[in-house]
Image (cartoon, rainbow, N blue to C red; front, side, top):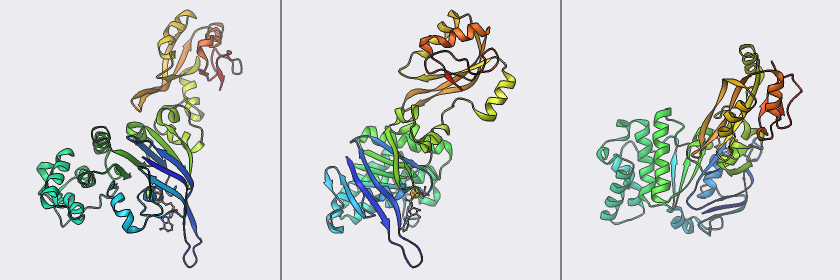
Length: 354
Ligand SMILES: Nc1ncnc2c1ncn2[C@@H]1O[C@H](COP(=O)(O)OP(=O)(O)OP(=O)(O)O)[C@@H](O)[C@H]1O
Ligand SMILES: [Mg+2]
């Protein structure tokens, strides 16, 4: 649905400030019907990238295609019909306080010159979809943050877009309201078939609703892929740090030291993947090697609706039993944080040294 080919955006310097490249040679493909997340720290270039998609920013070089149409070469006038197919929602909602909920939703349609009856029908339908039909006569200041963002989404939907761009739509909302708005965006994607590109600095947003993700750092896309694979196997340090913020990981540093004080036995961290059988096999293996265990740390979360995580166990058994267990070929990928019964440095063939 969207294709960026070697897109660069350099803002010209003014006066004393030097030119600044906010988006640096970015190529990416957003599949039709997907929810595509872009994550990065503040200043990474996310908003600029999003604004390049609807050409609110013109690229310095490279090309932007939406639904097969090259946009970067078009005039403002030539862009107009294509922009109508691209809706946008914002962190600060960008509503008119002087207009009602209905008025805000209908405004872009009136501006586009649609007939009155069609404006009414589309705006009412969009408000019904987001669950605000009953509040159509209210003004934005009489609404909660979550309701305001639903108006923002209704306004975008009323124009029947093919693509919805979301710039930190949930960043101003509390966790519960964030959940409601993310669920609404997922419905927009699934029930209306609208392709969504959302930018965020929260990996939890990516975890909950995205199919694919691109990680931005310093204007570049440093990693991208299917959400589950990126979470399970992050390649870039920026990605790994984002993943650590939402997934329990193998204990390290001071956390590991504290765990060792409380749990003198051998500590092993068992990864859990939706397509692996360690979760199922673990109790059988522990029984086979005569081991008992305590749960120490970790957890399993849903990533893109599939389970992913890791669990750290303290093993109760002799050194020989623990060593035999760790040497089992089925335990490749299990990490032993050698202590207690397990001498550090003596790990089984399948185990990875701490
Ligand atoms: N019009 C502009 N002129 C000059 N520099 C700009 C302009 N717009 C953005 N920048 C710079 O480009 C960089 C990327 O900005 P951008 O807003 O795309 O980042 P972001 O990832 O969206 O950050 P945030 O998470 O804080 O919203 C920043 O250093 C910003 O100062
Ligand atoms: Mg931004």
